[in-house]
Image (cartoon, rainbow, N blue to C red; front, side):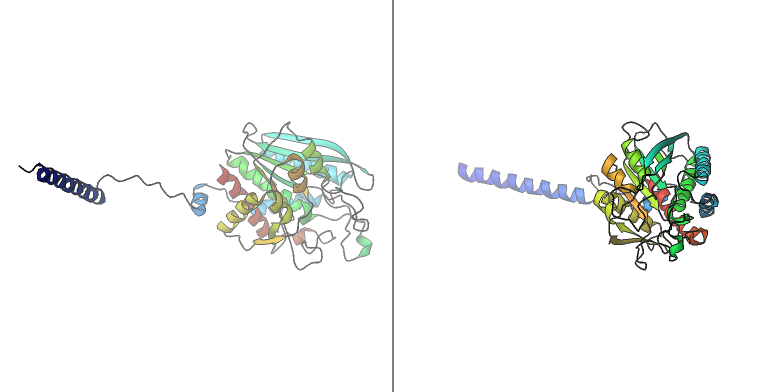
Length: 345
């Protein structure tokens, strides 16, 4: 017997058997046999928004909150109208939030005046360490120094859009949060003395003369060691046909937050208001929140290419009154903020 031939034959048979087994396994897997599990596709932003059960922002309610502030008159620190509006804001925000803090402080303005100010703070789910900061300034400018009439340059202005609009939106956000509690911790801060910066006739002589209330809070937060995942500042968010651009300070310190907010606004149909255009950095409350307490914070603020100031038409003029407020714009901003909150849940 030829043993070498026999061994070759055995090897040939083994090889053919292995090929047949592999072929059968391939057919079995491809025809309904056991397959590897596939990961489900991540939900799209639109799907997440649909599932988030976001409340409907009431623009008429927000408009009422703006109007009530303006009805007191200019909210300039050290005035009776400032005190009256502070009492209204404390009482109104206090109806909606389970925890209120009023931070009284004395700060010095650019001209040496000592200002008695109040930062008004309301919190939802105060025990939750995962928090979002929402803020706006509630004071109004003591000088209408960009008014076309020089006779008005040292008169206090109504401040409907510049100040009251952001507060009005956040009061309506607070009202909605009180009805449908989010799981996130939310802090709403109304900063004082944001608009007591240098008069345009002396502008540039001193640093850090704006946003005095937020500077104070950032150095002395209402809770020791306070942290938030991110912050959103609202400023001048009520004028008709407003345009909110990707402002430079926001993009420097919190580009991811800005992109998230802009993506959400576009997804809910407000992309015409939220432009992807990048614009110059500005000094506003968010600058000091970013620099001092290091909470990544963006500014939703009206930018205009049609004015010499770069802001809305009646910025720092006597015409910044209720005629400048469009409820539709309040809706755009308020609904965007609410959607951000409930998506974070």
